[in-house]
Image 1 (cartoon, one colour):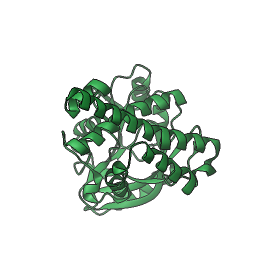
Image 2 (tube, rainbow, N blue to C red):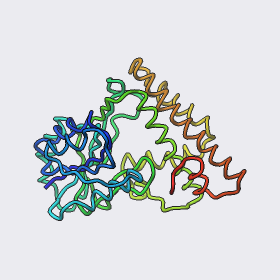
Image 3 (tube, rainbow, N blue to C red):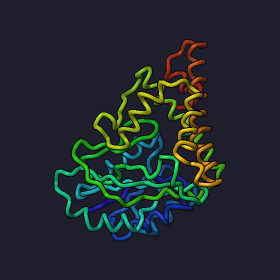
Image 4 (tube, one colour):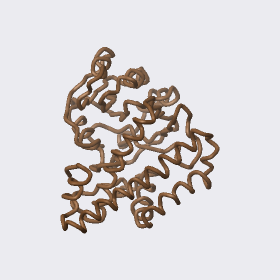
Amino acid sequence: MLTAVILTRDEERHIARAIRSLGGIADRIFIADSGSTDRTVEIAKEMGAEVRFNPWRNYASQYNWALGQLPADTDWVLRLDADEIVTDELRTQISKILPKLAPEIDGVVVSRRMTFLGRPMRHGGIFPVRVLRLFRHGRGRCEDRWMDEHIKVSGPVAQLPGEILDDNRNSLTWWTAKHNTYASREVVDLLNLEYGFMRHETVADLGGGQAGIKRWLKEKIYARLPTGLRAFAYFFYRYVLRFGFLDGREGLTFHVLQGFWYRFLVDTKLLEVRRHMAVTGVDAPSAIRQILDIDV
């Protein structure tokens, strides 16, 4: 039995599309909602999903809470975001291959692609990214991190070439506000790397495939480069060296905002928290709470 787990809050624009994309492969759809004020819950229930409420702390804790709510007869779990869809190709592959996998296989890695302002991002060296999104119930969990969290399994994984498509239809204003929040969360992880005030989990510990390699590069190489300069270097790598400019005006906007502005915002917030620590003498968790309004 395959259960799809989706986390929601005010996703009425996307949730029906996500649920429809699971037709024929998901025996159960579990929605963990953190307080939607729109029609998200109503739509999900009308389409046969089970919906439960849990207060939000971060993605990892919410997802792991959802895993704990699943019944014992759950065989496989599919992680899907509300603004994502399972493509026809991947849905066919799951139907045909999942029942035939050997019992020692703990998870399945698939591809994930993204659209931005309605255009698929095909260049820049970041898509499609290979991610572990299918795993046996009880053998996988979400990393305990504040940002860029992945599913971890300890056993071998299988590979499927099909894709999950991230196609968010919200406005650019929504997108920038969301990434402002992401930047604060990423600062928490960066400071934890430096000060070790909470448990640090990473897919790189278990190899982690492509995700593990990217995490190792991010934590061991990128994080040690000069702040500010590294954001520009990353943008130059994506937009020029990896031909991000071939995705047109939408590509320019995406790589400037996500490849430079977002990364520069993370660095600036990181400097702000460090300056507050130096001036006031408080520890990292206290500075994070006072500057970023995040209680770790």
